[in-house]
Amino acid sequence: RRSSTGLRSRASECAPAACRMSRKKAKFGGIDIDVDQFAIIVMYSQETQHFDENGALIAQDSVPGRKVMKVPRGLQIEELPGLAQEIVEKCKYIPQSRVGEVETRLAQLQQFEAQMNGSQPDAMMEQQLLQQQQYQQQQYQQQQYYQQQPPPPPP
Image (cartoon, rainbow, N blue to C red; front, side, top):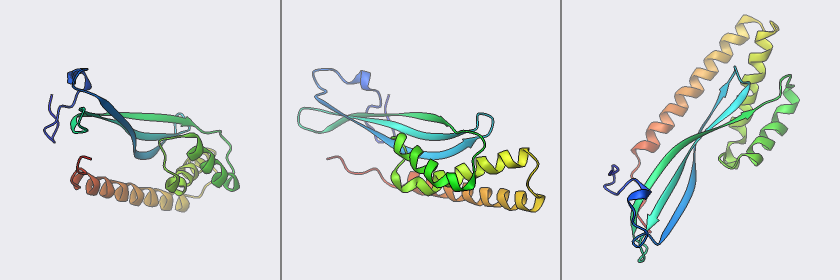
């Protein structure tokens, strides 16, 4: 099978004699929440590049993945920054620069739990839904931007 770059996209097509080196890299894909599991969902892709004996890229593949990180119920607002930092440190797929995004997602889970317990006014819920929609729109636009970027040149 060939990818959009014209290179083979399956490592199994790379003959052992021709394939001298492989490089794996986990690429961050995004963060979401699952209110049913009360968890942070981390999307990523595992990219593998295969090189010949001269170091030329001969094949590559990308396998999507997701990691579910369950969150304890009964979170307090003051616990969110520390828990966000702990999640980023424990999950190799989340870059350190995304601690704020993890904290935002934890706040959404905490607010959902409060809403289910009936302790939030309707105006606050509407504002939170609006913020969440704006955030999702921003994430979508960033995804579209990165998909339009040309791939980096081979080493």
